[in-house]
Image 1: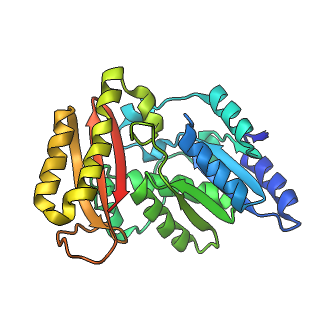
Image 2: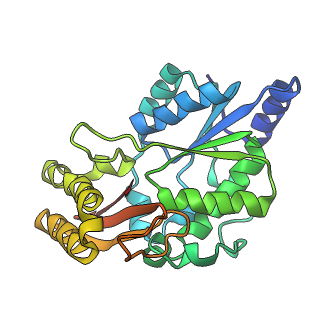
Image 3: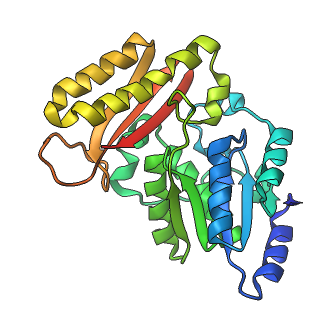
Length: 279
């Protein structure tokens, strides 16, 4: 695996490697890698000739500076995992490389309702930061395939919007959520949970399963019970929503024929966890 810290060096290497028509798969991450990330590397190796992974904790997408400061960093372990998984390249840029003019007064993206629903509502500015860094990374790597996890369901929708705004031919491949044996969705933030909080964390999965089984029998009662499941496990809830899988607008009709998704965001202590499940 080749490691690049400067974007110009990565671009030069990619130009050489793709001159013969080799395709590139790209897995952007913020590090603290786990099996969910590695599943994206595995899928990229199936789909593309070359797999590029990036690790960059992007300061512009944290609406809470303390959350940015506490984000786990496990670089040596991450490199070992990527080498074992067969990634071809790791890109480790610094803030001056991606934001040479600084992080103030950056561009704004028209994301429509996605910026005011669910994550957009509870994390104002977050998706603008996601788009700012992803626009830069995509312009550097120019992948044929972009691989992201479905755990960040709304973020996948935002990135699809970004790809449209950029007018590029990159295909977004949203890959299935990878879970722990007890159902907790794998997340870098799980490293910050105490043993008690980690045990409580499975309530999100149990709440989603309950919604999957009971929502069509009685939407309001199912949502109320899911809320109780989380509160009994000491979660502070941002939202529990059953929504259109294509727009994220709330759905209340149990007879609807459109695809719907249940989405949850809640705090266990000061650690914010998100998860979702297609119903």
